[in-house]
Image (cartoon, rainbow, N blue to C red):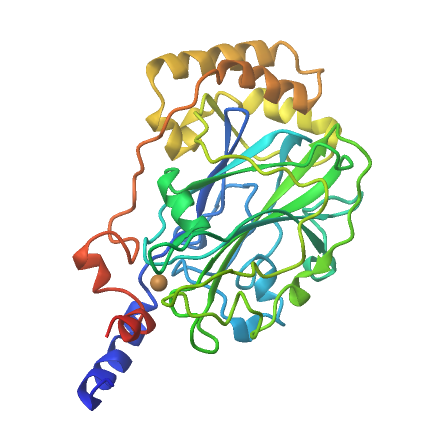
Length: 364
Ligand SMILES: [Cu+2]
């Protein structure tokens, strides 16, 4: 049992620990084209933040949504989230590469992806409390031979802190919110100990089929006592119940690999017709994405080529402009992660001292 002194210490560090960064999605990549996400640690302090495909949220500490908020709108797209100002275009059957800035090793848990149809008005104005999410991807406990096991989050870390998800090929075309989520379970053995890190992005899905799966309102996705929410991962688990509704029948499981970035694009705004020109003219704006700095000069040249060819085809659809860049994305390679200074509560002994009081309580 912890002594009175250590309890006092845990209480004392609680405020500071909550400031320690965990992570957020820096950008998403579709067929080699990178779209900037919402950075909750810098955008709130900008007088004129860029319009991006990621939803705005108030988690300036890169923090989480706790189970006692599962019934509140914060669980939908993170704290006080508001609609992203633009979207990315993706064809059904294509993959979306979701790049986190960092993820702490200690924060084991499932990685889950949902879509929700926004209707004809699009996702930039939809009421988030009406969105009905259906699950297109989930990875929970992969291997439990060594407690606390290997989880989806560990695969994410091994994949350069990123996740690849396929848009179901049979899904009906339209506007969708992609809700990507890591649930950290390192403290989930206690009530209200799990930590949900939802991240939302606006997509326009082209092509596809006619599937329109039934979904679940965000505020009804989970309960505090779900088997996959209130669970002690520091004991051997024979099975792990990934929380939330079951996968849709059209879901496609993909192995985790990185996507090389060959170009970047601004979020598409306005109608689908306007989308084509917006993508075509912005595809060479490489400086808007930090990750593009990682690409080789050859890749940069390819991006220029892609931009050149795109600019001559502004009458084509946005999807076509994106696939032009896709051709340049011939290989896959791992990007060099660039964790922000002072970010994260994992990765090394020193960092471990900055974990949540809950983490410390477990260790102690
Ligand atoms: Cu933490």
